[in-house]
Length: 135
Image (cartoon, rainbow, N blue to C red; front, side):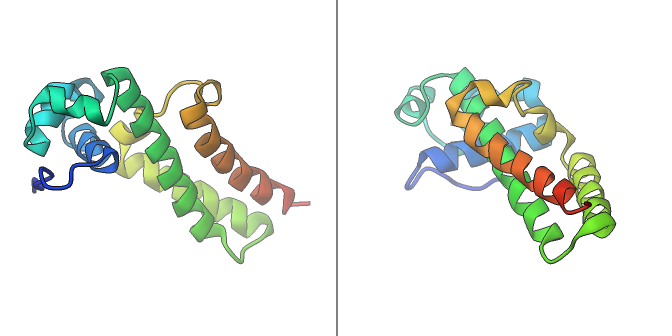
């Protein structure tokens, strides 16, 4: 189902539209023209929200990392030891299986870009906390 974004278009809405394109058609289909069409604006209007396709791809990767962190944190909350590890691995596999194109949109080295470094570090902290809990 396509959503109308024209009224109140924001960077978050542009990223949401980009993620929808990635989910439906794969990362190679993500272009500024495709996002403009999906949001109902002219492609040049997107430059008010993102500087380039590369920046948009980075913002998509950051959002995916944030989404994974939220999901995994909720899943392991109140768990410890082997139970927490098993739940974390189950959730990780479930996410990647449900959203393969989204997962593939994460930059290969997210710690080298300040826009993805924070979200990547927070995701890493979830994994480290679970592993520390195993003794």
